[in-house]
Image (tube, rainbow, N blue to C red; front, side, top):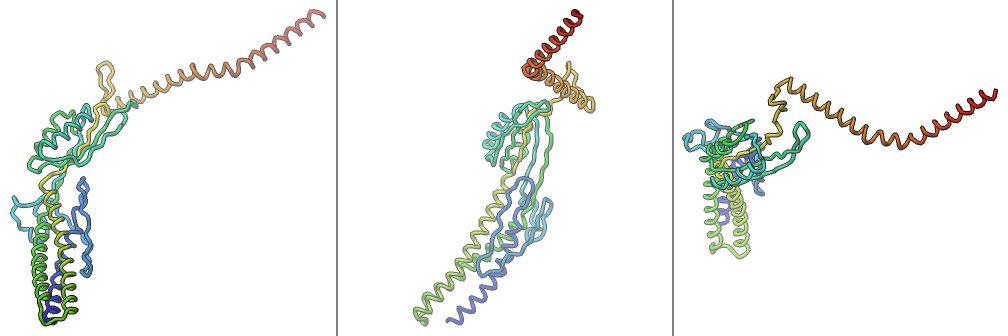
Length: 322
């Protein structure tokens, strides 16, 4: 009986080793995107199993690459879609609240939001905001249309996608293999518990050994299920990273209804800044520098003037006496 159990352990160990290596290579590749998608955490192999190879492969759009999902029908493909959008609005704070409500109405949610102060070319503070939302993928175009509906200007719109069909299909295969391995191990444990030819010590060791294998397999199953759920949620919804710029930030100088553009605008802005600086200098000179000079050097000038006047008076007296 013990030889039979040992032989089954060797076979299961080889199966689990192959499954674990392929599984964690797939999981560690994860979702690596530069447009706002959170990177899926790398997972470590269970004790006693080979460590996952350091591989990184990403399939963006199209038909995907590798794995059994390469030939999946187009309408069944799993694509993670992200949109980066920059628009100019009158009130970034108000628009951010509207976008937040829109995400909820469409069945999505707000991932993050931030509002901060920036400055115009004249140095005036104006608000600017960023907000990231997730909306159902089927309603992405509707969400973008409503966001841009009252925008003064659309500065940038970038859409990107990552096809994870093959990754998800591979995970399904690994999950099936691991669940079958778990069933086999449970059957072996029942056999070890009910083996009449084993003494208490031998039976306990056999049960503990099988239980350790079952624990490892269950841990891998939970990790794969979590990664599959992450893929599913990421493909069911789309991420919109929205930047809201205040109209005052880009508003050109207007002189008597005329809005200069290009070089003329830059030259006029430089002239305005020079005149502002010169006027500020005259104000400081009149209200600060001159009073300080009068207070400090006024008494000294009076003393010097008195001395000079006294010397001249003495010289005049001497000239008359001669």
